[in-house]
Image 1 (spheres, rainbow, N blue to C red):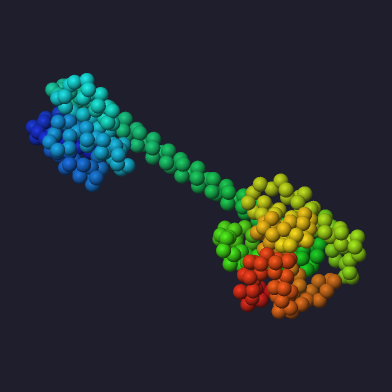
Image 2 (tube, rainbow, N blue to C red; image 1 turned 120 degrees about the vertical axis):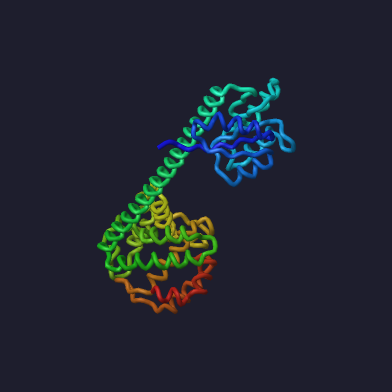
Length: 346
């Protein structure tokens, strides 16, 4: 299918416009015309043109000024401009190209010359537009592919965490439900935290179940021991954050990196008395501080092989009393302000 090009001819002499149209009409172009730079600019802003044939010497806005104005307009800057003028001095020719013209034809001109130069510029403009369109389409395709790839990577991370959580569940019957509740409690705390985003909320929800992944390396008889642990056994239990660090320290993806932080830091305490590194205050990552509270809340309010469940009110009082000691005061404040919502999760 043959393209129908739209050409704007700008000249303050009507006869000059007619001459150009008569010569070019053999090529089956569509024409518009303007007799001043101001009128031409108005037409350009409200219509689509593939080429402008532009005289220079016009009252008011001359051709140079109109071309400069077009090149400053994002919508018009790529439309090719051919100067069609009687000004033959070298300074005018140089200025014509300097302000953005693609060609400069001096009157009087040969019909074949005008036809050939117009055709060349239109074909070049069309090729550039096709290339630009294809480039934009390619960029969109690449962006879509990248987003899909990242989405698949994220889904893979979530699947890995789900599988590891299932392994933890096989080690301890309590742990299976525990990790699910930890995810919900952590997400709710993140939801109300003023410095965290919806994306952070999503990440902590998926990563929190990995908080005790280091226990995979702890003997099951210690994890499930129904009586009080010996000092030696407790020392072994306390190695699980370090074990998790060894497992996950090479993680480079968002959710697994968050899982690494959480598993490594959720036993640190606000006052610096926690383990494994004795981090203090905001040295502890916000994800670690949130899961620290979530872990204690859930552990206290559910039966374990070594203890009976506390009431929610007793567990809440315990956590509130340890604000600024074991727990981040702001996170405790959030918990305290939304007690009933956390009660429902428990």
